[in-house]
Length: 232
Image 1: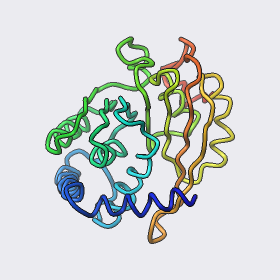
Image 2: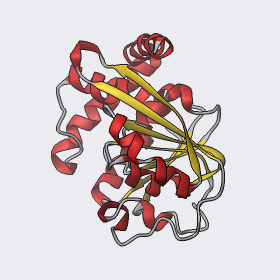
Image 3: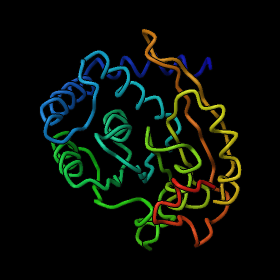
Image 4: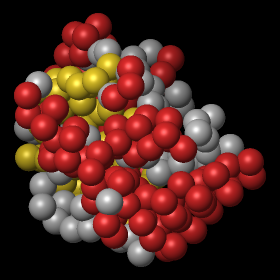
């Protein structure tokens, strides 16, 4: 917890100052401008967006290896991927998003900010069956997409052996315990649960970190909505 608190202060500084601060300001303006058209977020207040979206996203940065080839599932408005790329230009991302309008926004935003990103209009459960994407990434992350067991089935098939899965969650004690079976089936083991509190009482948060230790069996992800309707 001490380490996360120290990083919280550094992350807040990066969001507010220098060249990264300017990029976050540009991202916020673009997000607000396009929100009515693309339904990207219900959070539009500048300070709330800065903390709940930008700061929370950047909290995962220490867990991304230098130069990592990363994937994000359910990118939506670009959280956590876009804030992570702003503070970590060494990262390259493939953003998986099933809604075409949101893909258009992600492409516009990453181009405007000069970020190294590829936007793929596809469901994660379909993309993970493709040779181009299956077990090709050093790390895969997702935020506010689904319960942890379901999220693991979407994300872990994209992660190479020896890679990492990072899930951004709230207070996730029950979810972590419930997901142990899913992690085992999918070839991973939980490495840590890093907890922190956002400033101004804006929420208790948890980063769930899992290590991919063996290939995911070919049957997963199951597809046809089974990841949600019948979680592992």
